[in-house]
Image (cartoon, rainbow, N blue to C red):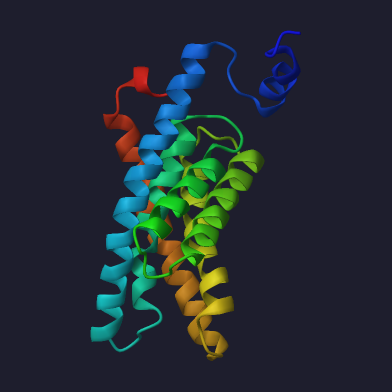
Length: 194
């Protein structure tokens, strides 16, 4: 019995490319970008904590950096245009972040997974290769990290403060997850993309 035949339909259903070289390149791209994202997100998380200790709004200020967490996931989704690539990158990024002692601990896996899933949903609903969809995916994905943080870490605060934090995270995602990704894609050679 040929071992590749039972898995051939799975590869086709997931939208993965059929030749082995593209699959290996896609996998390597996801691993490298997730590793870079996980290691930098630990530093960004601690920088956010530092900002929160010296500002008037300790809950809102770290959200201004939340788009930097999402940058790597949106970049992975654009470089590997396969459904689920941002979710896979988010899962791996979260595992790396948790193993490097993130300020969120094990919850960093759930945060990164949700960020990647939100980006994939946006790319499934909108056309992937439009700048508008990249901006929306970055903004919504960045704002989604507050779901876990609000659910597990925050005391009950006024609704206006939550709205301000979600808005700050969305703007950060527009800037870092959207704008920075579109600029980075222009610098990256096209033979590394798709």
